[in-house]
Image (cartoon, rainbow, N blue to C red; front, side, top):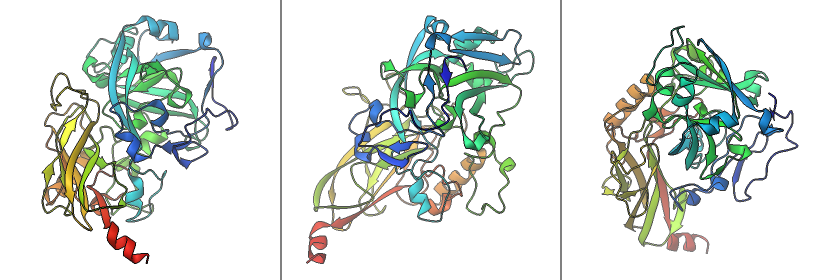
Length: 427
């Protein structure tokens, strides 16, 4: 594309913060240490996870850059950055999470394929840009529209980014038109992140942000937008990021039996301790994050120090001095909720976190996963996070293991070793 190009090698990668944990160097995939996530509600750009499939595109001439909008519409157009800047600017605070977040814990059950993410393949940012629904109006698609007069029902985003999974073709993904044209869905064409111009790792000069949906649908380095009849047929929509039961392996998988994953289920993790840690007996602050997809808030986060026999409700918060209410008008519906509790930690404790989300659903996630998730949670007897749909986290990772290691939303467990016992064992 004029003005924005995808390099053929990794010779011109942007600088990154040295504290990041690198999970893959080429392409570059990295996450911050877990403790950095709860240091602030808004994740600094340097510590926002980096997820890439190839060399990072470069802007050669911003004045020549434009995005085409074509497909099943009567008036296709090209829009420049100047055109986008002229539209009303909106700021949306939203958490993006890789579907592979917490994959390493799933790989301990059985081998999975994918980048070895710990618990930090997510981040919370304030994104600035134009709403996609305003841009779609430029090609004759009204707000809240669900189908064009020519039969378009999905909006496909195509990147400049080239990746091996697409056999050298561009990364692409789609969302339903009814979501794209809904002002309340807050889908953005973003050019700012935390009040600054996007950097290269995060999609400069323009990216899509689809709140409440797995990060794979928020396409970076936008090249074109296509209005299409059916969902995108790209690799990452049809042969990846789908939820299968533990019985499916690489010999019997049938990708066509599952729909692409969209909303992410309720999730939580403890960030102030390692998965196996040593602390003294006594009081300790337990803190972490909780989130759910589709704009659902977090109703409750529970913490156990005895492996799930008893529970204490943690304090939930987002912004300073503003009480968090899961469906409150001052709460950020697309953003994570941080939690904390100061608890007495016994010797050799097993600390568990779980969350519950609220009742309404903006966009439903995979029906297959929802059924599996419900079954697991009905059988659960210990800690969980609950979202506003009364969605809870499954107790055991074994029950949701899948060959790609996606959507590990099981209870996060921390094993505490007593410091005096560890000291004696070293003598």
